[in-house]
Length: 141
Ligand SMILES: [Fe+2]
Ligand SMILES: [Fe+2]
Image (cartoon, rainbow, N blue to C red; front, side, top):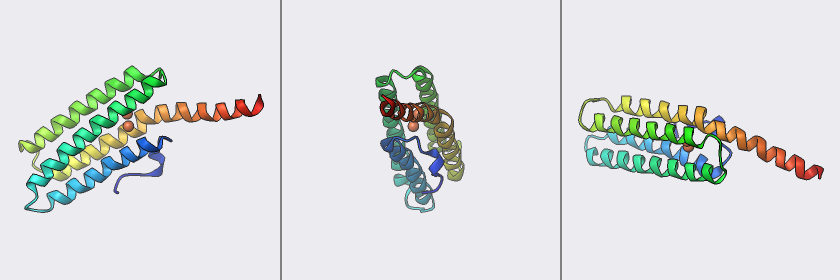
């Protein structure tokens, strides 16, 4: 899928798969917009993508809450803002305020990449280091 690179990995397989799935949806969206008869399909893909992103954000938040993550609140706020932006972008596209589908997928791709790179990578680093530390400590004692 276009847009996924190994350095986006957060070290949690289920989350990596979810992140990869976003890019799959974007590929499907782009393909559907190239087909003149797929208007219904385009809408379906956008709706599915939005619910998938919502579900992923909730799962990630639950996981961070279980870890008593210090950045949970800040991360939740980022998700909230992000979801609002995605919703309004989809609305702008479906009401014709943005006519070009490539703009929608370019913006979404950029937002998704930025969120994973800048926000999700923060917990990735925190828990990667901690896991390494745990292994080190259990080896010592
Ligand atoms: Fe996140
Ligand atoms: Fe995420």
